[in-house]
Image 1 (cartoon, rainbow, N blue to C red):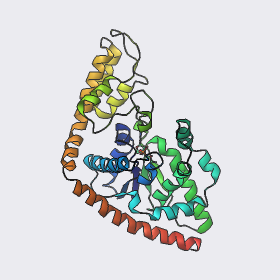
Image 2 (cartoon, protein in one colour):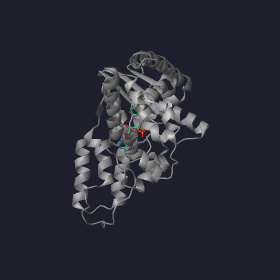
Image 3 (cartoon, rainbow, N blue to C red):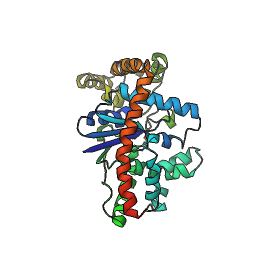
Image 4 (cartoon, helix red, strand yellow):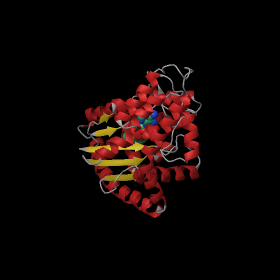
Length: 319
Ligand code: TYM
């Protein structure tokens, strides 16, 4: 089984990335041939500062490794180490109906939030399809927000195979329903572009300020707190031990504790969960050469797999 996923270097890694994708990707590296990459070409649709893009790429690499990606087990690389992806994206674009891309929520959403509607942003899902099909991936661990992009990938692959013969494996999305969407500080989906994220590797002070600023309702201290739709509970469920979560939830039902205290308790749970990753991150940070070597070696391996698929596609289309 081949597993593949990617993350854009458009900002710092956050809890949404970890629970939506990285945690399952890291677990799956023991179950098959894993390919994980930093989607730097994709990030160009929203990051136009070259220095920022470079430092984001490095940070994502450090972070993914610190969380447990094992380069002995998984091929870890930059998307741009495999420029073949663009040739395949072009081939795929010739079988992609415009309507399929016009319906993509993420494009419409970005436009609504003021990004200029570039061709790159519009064609984003085709490049993503190329990322996946180039490695003949069977399983793609992603958060729920990527579901539609996976459907587009499957549609494009089926269309291509129908027209040119069985070239591509049809990939399956792997979405953990329990954590399909991690909420951010304001209760909406946690996302770099909503500025509501809790980063995995931030300084203690700004982190605790953010946790203390999580949006809650105005239920008085003594009254029971609503559990349905609570961001505090949703985050606690991800990071606390099951008994600890049960106790935390009971304190909502019982009343008598204000949101300030409930947030402090969540802060302790979050910090404890993140400490091992942060320690690993500091170790890796002192050896930037090693991180670059890992990405370089991963790029070489990924490219040799990609070239085989591309050759197959070239023959199929008659080029
Ligand atoms: P990106 O960089 O936005 O996010 C990386 C992964 O994190 C997941 N995620 C979340 N999951 C649950 N709750 C959240 N609040 C949350 N926020 C982010 C995303 O679903 C994603 O799995 N288009 C992709 C990158 C990409 C890719 C690919 C992924 C490019 N090519 C090929 C898979 C396969 C993206 O923008 O992810």
